[in-house]
Length: 154
Image 1 (spheres, rainbow, N blue to C red):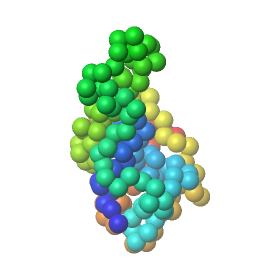
Image 2 (image 1 turned 90 degrees about the vertical axis):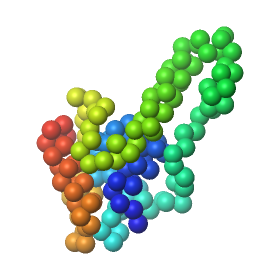
Image 3 (image 1 turned 180 degrees about the horizontal axis):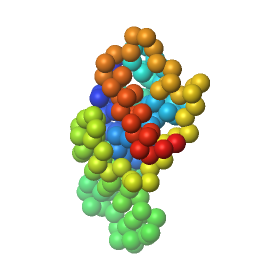
Image 4 (image 1 turned 135 degrees about the vertical axis):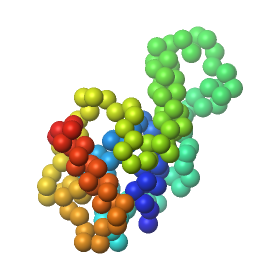
């Protein structure tokens, strides 16, 4: 079992483009229907755990070797599509560097002002189907997410 903080850290380091900030991780955990998580012993647990990378942070990239060794030839590195990939890669690396901060409760740096939550459902989203034995950190995450839902709307 994992704490909320550890779960968000794994999400951010494993998938920085999907979870570039804390709000995106909370949104996925508590609002997204069919997100792969289910309540077990008071904590949200990813029920396809064996498919998740075991060691974070790791940032896979087909350009990783080229980027770290500056081996990308100019005729390729100047292509707009490659520039876009390299920019996203740099942003993802920055997200991974800040993963510990992002996993900290109420740390909202990098959240766009117009962020919109997934259209949650009272019957299926985990935020509305809390177990009786929910652990304090996960309950705090639920309450934090409810405040964010009021701020950013549905």
